[in-house]
Picture 1 (cartoon, rainbow, N blue to C red):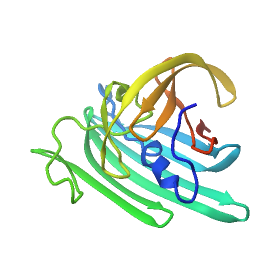
Picture 2 (tube, rainbow, N blue to C red):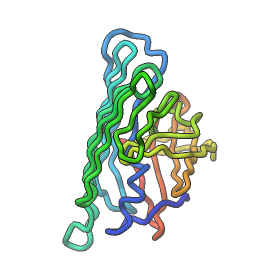
Picture 3 (cartoon, one colour):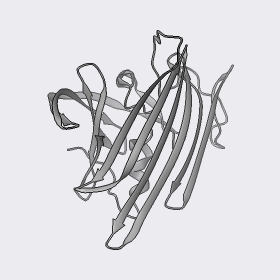
Length: 223
């Protein structure tokens, strides 16, 4: 299938820049009462489970709050070759990102991202990004099919704005939580990587998969 950086001690950070951090946005929230949704994924590298990635979404009035947490361990024989931990909180108003705060420990490399919507635009707290970004900012919200209409998304781990190209690949059957369901598979392509994302007929996020440089499959399975 598609290519991404190999999961090795040196190259794990590359693939994790895009794959792991979804944002939340949903237009047309109908109810003023808080509603909670959750996605819990077991993450595999080849046949080995390496950790989990969980999303908890709270919708209230015209505001959406997403808390996401990931914890991966890549083992080599009897020791941990790579450890990855990430927590991220995002607040969306309407269909646009209003605030983000994330913290990542990528095998000892610490990354922090903060961003806030201001009157002049969305300001990302990075030394190389002094000017606010104009327009409605969205991030890699894999669970939300609205991102399939975008050509630029914010990477919540790095704070970088990334050009993407999205193409429908196939309509197929996918096994999810022990049953076969109809699904559409889309490919998201950036300059550095490609990955496949599956959605059900009613636009629910079902799975994510990519192939590393060394030929192993990285995949998310709903549990």
